[in-house]
Length: 267
Image 1 (tube, one colour):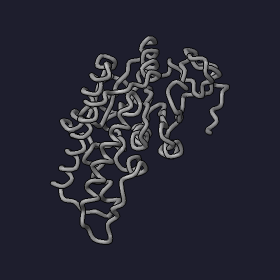
Image 2 (image 1 turned 180 degrees about the vertical axis):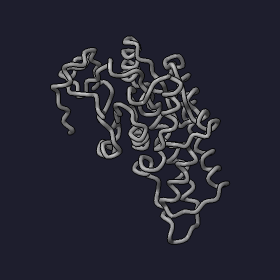
Image 3 (image 1 turned 120 degrees about the vertical axis):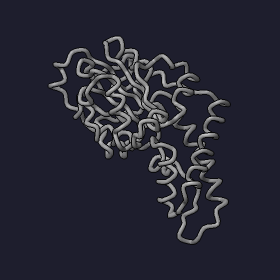
Image 4 (image 1 turned 30 degrees about the horizontal axis):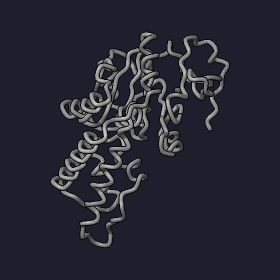
């Protein structure tokens, strides 16, 4: 279900594509990587280095696909998922059988490389997302941050956003609680539980197809997909109600009534 409609202007004066009726939401949930911070690109780099090194050294049989890891591989198999799930999904797609020790080793190598890149290069924040979170809060709508990563707290601290969200659910919590990874909605539902709200009155924002599918399966009121890398069609196919390139294209509206006469046209 989409509660969004078309709107003529965004707060920065640009033409807006989506208007959100703030009064329709009791809370909002934001994914971290690629939505709040630009760490999705750092994750992609770390995965590329680790998988390319692994594939280049591997002496497998002809049934294995050992071509270099691609951005499409990142989006399809690892984006938004817990590290171990990502390793398993990618290797299976390439016809590679790996035991638990190999999967764990690749997952740990990737995490170490990600932290190295994070320490060296820092974190870029998407200001339009932070602005929207602030606008929601000013209207009494609290927000949660959700991430499959165990590095969520470190990323938020590096970005200066540690006190931005009322609730945080991350990879550490998922491991402690035994929550399955996306596209299962469990991690989002835990955030909703901690916020004390129902999914059908909650906005959810994701950039990964696995996360959009999780939001759809969790019956969230409106699921917005952010396309920062040319995968808008995949986000639509995954069940997004709206797809934007940046949350600067989204505006909040306090009055619900005009939406009844507006029609959202999918590009």
